[in-house]
Image (cartoon, rainbow, N blue to C red; front, side, top):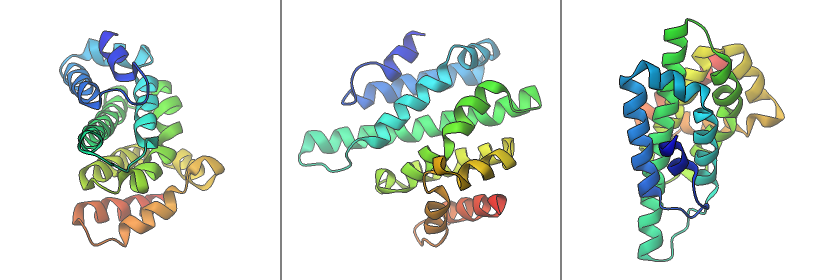
Length: 189
C-alpha cells in the first residue's frame, strides 16, 4: 500500500523518478509473489496505476529547460514501466485464472484504448520503447477479450486508438512497433 501511495501521491508535477522506482518495486513484488499479485488486484492497485499513468500522459511534453527535460525523461521511464506492469498483470491474470477477471476487465480493458491512443499520440512521441510497451499492453487486452476491445475501440471512449494504430503500422521507425500495431489492427478487424 505504501508503494501505491508513492505511485499516485502528490500532484501532477511529482517526481517521476521516485514514481518509476515505486513501479519497478511493485512490479518485482507482483512478479515474484503470488500473494502480492492477488493483493495488487484486490487493493485497487490497477486503478491507482492507471490514474497515475493517465496523469503522466496528459502532462505537457514540451521542455524549456534542463530541469524540465530531465523531468520529461523521468516521466517517459515511468510511462514505460507502468505499461509493462499493466501488460504483465493483464497477461498473468488471464493465465493464472484462466479467464479475464473483473478487476482487469473494469480497469485495464476499460481504459486501454484511451491510454494507448495517448501513448501513441503526442504524449509518446519521444520514446519508442514507451510506445512499444503501450502496444504490448493493448495486445494483451485484445487477447483477454477481443470483442470487448473491438467495441471499446469503435465507441466514443476509444480515444482514436484505431487511427493511432494505423499511424504506427505505417511508420518506419521500429519494426517491433510496426508489427505490434499491425497485429492489433488485425485483431480488431
